[in-house]
Structures are given as structure tokens and as C-alpha cells.
Amino acid sequence: MKRKRVDWYKRGKHLQLKKWYVLALMVIALLIGEVAWKLYPHEQKSWSWTVGNQTILIDAGHGGVDPGAVGKNSLEKDITLAVSKRVKVLVQQAGGKTIMVREEDVDLGTAQGLLKRKREDLAQRIQLSKDEQADVYLSIHVNSSPKETLTGPQVFYYADSVESKLLAQCIQEQLNLLAGGKRVAKGNQELFILKKADQAAVMIELGFLSNAQEEQKLNDPNYQQQLAVAVYQGLANYLGTSQNSQP
Ligand SMILES: [Zn+2]
Image: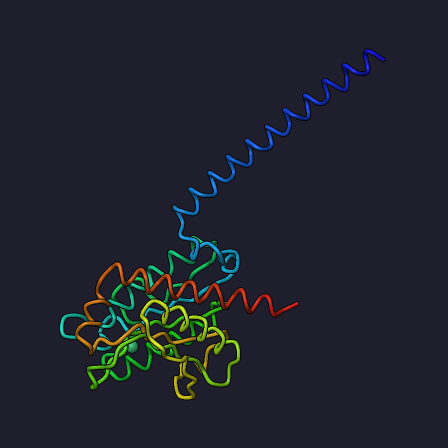
């Protein structure tokens, strides 16, 4: 009997030690979690699992002989490339695969005549979207208008594609949060590249180069990063919603 009491006492102490051990582990886990939370902004991490295993085709609009929209101090092709490269990094950090239509200041055409070359370039981009079997196609552009007061991001999708519409809405929502705009993702029947794409596809106009203030912002590396994060976040939200809707 005496012995048994001692055993119980020992066991109690052992359990107490175990409790402290578990508590200490929990505190350490919390500390690690807090550091990770600060190092990696939660809005980037919260949906990262949805992007892993996905292949994202990123098309930086224009390039080479084709400058795209021309601002007072900058060209559309340079801004689309800068933001596209940042989106690429974010997707890769989340474990996703990326295919870049271009990573330098080039176009995909070869003909001498500009019009023919542009047509070739467009056909090549469409072909890439078909050959590469990407899950999502992001075409990144910058807007321009004779109306210099217009500002803000605008996302387009092929009007007959339900998935593309959902993707466009998710990205527009994030861009609106960043830019403070109230634009709604727009369905379109004429944008050839969106119509021809086999996967969920959107054209993202990041803002207006024709507005002096927005041109300045679009050329600011900090704003370019914020735009990329918004595009990435919208993409991640879409993939979460899209995957969740499938049993
Ligand atoms: Zn463009």
C-alpha cells in the first residue's frame, strides 16, 4: 500500500511536468507564429495553399517594337513587365508554377511590317495559352484614354466564361481595395485573346497612363508591388473559391 501511494505521487509529478512541457511548447509555437505573421503579411499567406500545384500563365502586355500605351514619361510595355515579374515571384513563393510570355523587352512577332508583326505577336500569345496547359491566364496591361480624368484598375473577361468572370471579379475586388475604386469587372466579347483562351482568362488594366498622377504611381516600385500583391490575392481567392465549389 505504501509503495502504491509513492507511485501515485510520482505519477502526479510526472503529469505536472508533462503539463509544463506542453505549455512551454505552446508558448514557443505562438512566438514562432507571431514572428512568421510579421515576416509574411497574412493577406499573402492566408490563401497560399490554393496557388500551389497551379500553373499560371503571365502575359506582360506588349513589348519590343510595340510600346502599348504611351504616357508622358513612360511606356505601357515597361510597367506591364515590371508588375508581371512581381506577380511571378508571389505565385512561385506560394508553390505555384509560372509561365512567362516574356521576361524582357521583346515582342513575339518576326515580320517586318508592324501590323503583320502585331498580328503574329497576338497569335503567338494565344498559342502559348493553348500549348502550355496553364490553369489560369493573366494578361497584364495599362489603360489609356483621351479623357485624362479617368483613373483606376479595370479587369476584363470573356463574357461567356463563368470561371473567367469569377476570376475577374476576385482580382477586381482586390485592386479596388488597393486603389479605392468602385469599378466592376467587365464582360467582353471582342477581346480575342480572352475568347480564345482554354483556361480561366482575364485582362487586367492596372490603371490609366493618360492620367498624370496615376502614371507617376504606376511607375513607383512600391505601388507596382502593391498591384502585384492585389492581383496575386485575387487569383488566390479565385482558386480557393473555384476549388471549394468542386466536390
Ligand atoms: Zn495594352
